[in-house]
Image (cartoon, rainbow, N blue to C red; front, side, top):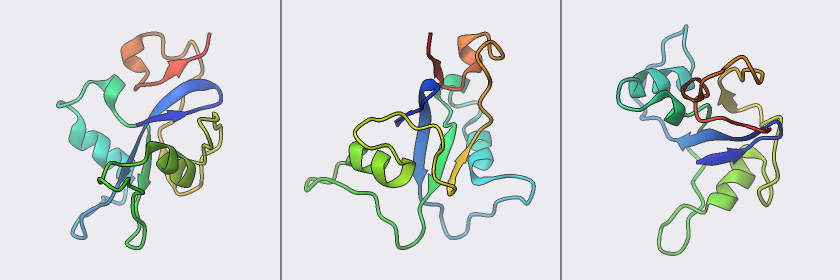
Length: 117
């Protein structure tokens, strides 16, 4: 999902629940594991750069017909109220290093990030 960011227009974020048998290597984060699993099946710009792993007691807020409530997900898990852009996400949200404008010069290097002009 598109997650508002203060310096960048938005980042590609994901909220997931890992299977209980998921083993994350000690030299990798859950975000790194998911990105490596998606490598080859998704272009780089579609890869998540933010990740919230749900705890057992956490649930995605959904409408009465079962669709995820994006505004509530952004508020609860990424700290964005009413689409307000965020610079510092909650500590439990994993993130990729964000390049400074000019470091990632090609759109396909941005990992789904959109730079402000």
